[in-house]
Amino acid sequence: MCLAFEQVDKKILESENLVGGSTVLCALIRENKLYLANAGDSKAVLITKNDMKNITIEHRASNEEEKVRVESLGGVIIVHKSRSLVQGSLQITRSIGDSKYKKYISCEPDLFEHDITNEDQLLIMASDGFWDVIML
Amino acid sequence: MTNEEVMDVVKINQKKAPGLSKVLVEQAINKKNYGLDNISLVVIYLSELGRME
Image (cartoon, rainbow over all chains, first blue to last red; front, side):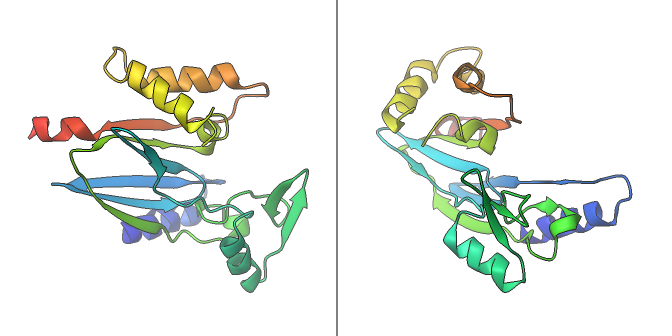
C-alpha cells in the first residue's frame, strides 16, 4: 500500500496536466483482516454493535506531531482564522500531489491493521467535507 | 452530531434501501451552513463480507 501511494504521488508530480493534490484513504480486506492506509485528513470510523471509534489519525497542521514534522523540514505553520495551515495555505500535512508544498508534506501513509470480528458492523470512510459536518 | 446521534442514524438506516451512504451524505448536506465542500464517502458492510465468500 505504501508503494502504491509513492507511485501515484510520483505520477502526479511528473504529470504536466495534473495540479493540486488529494487526501487518500485506502482499505484492503483479506479474510478477516482489515488494512487501512491513510495520508491526509480523510477518516475511517469503525461501527460495532454498540460503539464507534476512529481508526485513522488525521494529518492536519493542527496535529502537534505533524506540525513538528513539517517544521523540521523547514515548513511554517500559520494560523489563520483558527485554522492551522502549512505555508499559510494547506490544511493537510500529507497528501498525494501538491507539488508546491512537497518539500514540507509527505505522501507516506499511516498504516492500520484490524482483526474483523462478529462485533464489527460497518466501516465508514469519508473525506473531511463529511466529517467536519458530522462531528465525531 | 454526537456519536450517539450518528449511531442512531446508522442503526435506523443500516438495512434500508437505497443505503446508508446516501442517508449520511444527505445528513451532511442538510447540516451545512456554508458552501459545499467535497464529500467522498464509502460504507463497507463488514458484517456482510462473510456472506459473499
